[in-house]
Image (cartoon, rainbow, N blue to C red; front, side, top):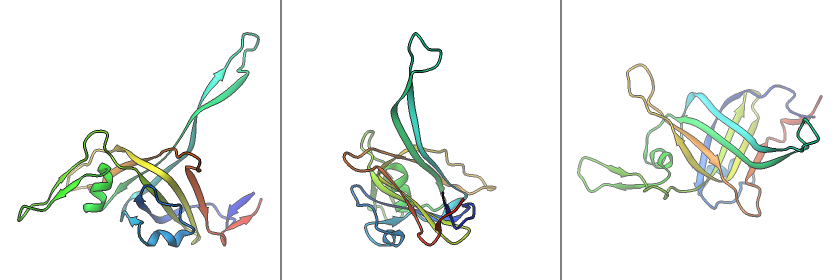
Length: 189
């Protein structure tokens, strides 16, 4: 069974990178450092939550059996959620799924979120740096921000942009790829 450097994986840091959809899957971890990929910046100390493929199923019951005769997968979902700690044009626009900026006023910049149903799709790459100095990655070929958390403004906590990024399907291509640092992925017990 493969393990990462024979040690448990502890997410010591990393980042979320986004690109316009469609953008091809990166060949390696370093590929996200160049255009068209953009780094979303600092993330709160809570880190990032990744939900691997979650299957929706339907039991196929028959009269003669007390247990399901079969279980059919009717859908799958995967998501990444994080609280973005930096507010700038890129993170605000990403959180809203697009929008426009107006700089015509001398002292004020005005942002207009996209209209209902007009949010953008993105390619997303989550890079995790493990405590054993190896990299793990999750690539969504096509994704959309589907949830936005409340932002709290007070003097005792950081005001973040909490987002949930949901993987979307793509015809004829794997919607999700997992990346592992070859030096850290070894065969073990």
